[in-house]
Length: 228
Ligand code: ADP
Ligand code: ADP
Image 1: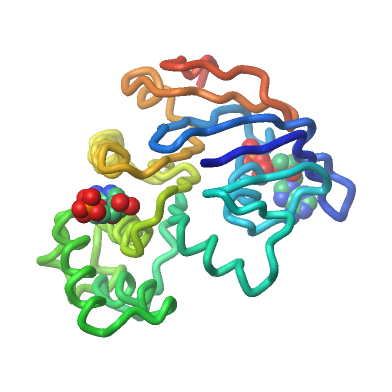
Image 2: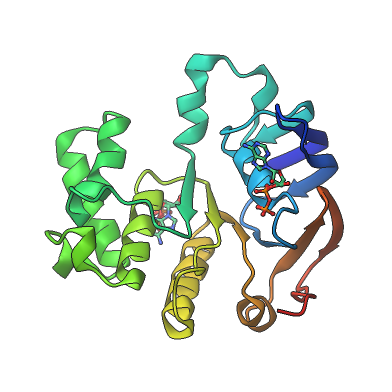
């Protein structure tokens, strides 16, 4: 499903962000990416959704060889990947409904389908009653649930989450984790970068640790492994 073969990433200013990364993530896995700040976690995830290109090496996502991808094929890869951020990144002037529906507009889904599917995912994240609210009228947890609804509305096979609980209190974070587990259970691969030791140690999953741009640990049902 996701595979990296000898992947290196240098940024134009000379920063070595990733070196010699080899990894395979199967369909339906749930992977925590851990490691110190600046280790290369965000870069690793940006390579998967083709926000950045590797300096060297091969990356395969859902059978697409990203290095050989024609520019016009990029949207096809991207629509198969939902992305969630620590700071939610909702459009402030659009309602909850519009923020989610917009992701389907972009891929030119039929109007009727947009309405049905948007309400379906808002129901799933328990936000139907807030469909007409603006992001500024929501709690942090509700904003993140809106972002999750937006991320799954086009039925992606992969969700990339960059510290999705970073701005949330522990109880709200647990709610977000249960939602991500439910989405994973329904058949979506999840790769989640996190500094949340409690979550990693309590909800055991595969743990991939990155330090200085390389994978230093890869364990099934692993531990967080760092002091906080
Ligand atoms: P993490 O997500 O683990 O904190 P990042 O992938 O963001 O790590 O960063 C890895 C390294 O690459 C860091 O040294 C960071 O400063 C650097 N870096 C990240 N993005 C850029 C960029 N656009 N240009 C130059 N250096 C970058
Ligand atoms: P099916 O397509 O087998 O009837 P679902 O309706 O549960 O299954 O999900 C359809 C697709 O939506 C899944 O294949 C998946 O990509 C995506 N998806 C994953 N999790 C959820 C979710 N929690 N709610 C809605 N869609 C989801």
